[in-house]
Length: 208
Ligand code: GRF
Image (tube, rainbow, N blue to C red; front, side, top):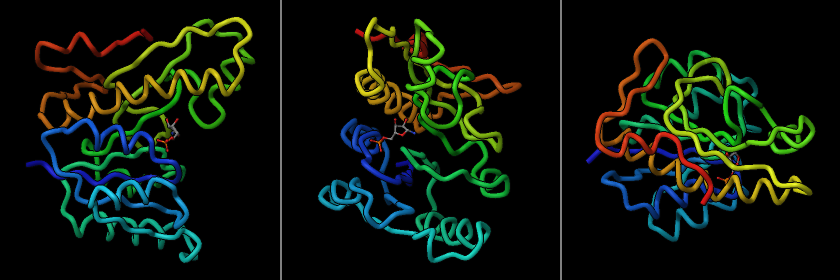
């Protein structure tokens, strides 16, 4: 069975969605950069080994990332899934897990990389918003796209309402992307992802 380490910083609902999806993979550890990440509790209840690599205990980014890599590598995972992990990772760290590390981002990339995506989508007046599961590359929120889900913006939407609808779609597409990853069905060529198999048409989902 393929082994996955999931990195979180907070609530951990995407991590929870991956765990609940019952993928043909073993979640060998959930690692947080914050001791107070709420998601750690769920992981522990599920019997998944948890670890905290407290960023405040490392004086430099290099020291933090080296501690983080140690926490990951002791489980020798095949894949690393970032799930609401709110630290920008340096190029060396990202290259270490090249082709093996994925992320979920709450926008239709390449639109709205970075933070506050829902607020920015509302400010720009986009009619279609959504989320993206993608491979992680050194350029933040920019790697090869695996799956996207579209969420129409409604008149009168608030940031919170839009975020909640996008989050529901994150919980659909991220486990799907991780499933394809562990099943070895994702091929990256020239920065583009091809999904082998019958349900590859699900690379684009729309809010139901
Ligand atoms: C999600 O919207 C994710 O896309 C973003 O941060 C949020 C984390 O939520 N990067 P959770 O911790 O998975 O509940």
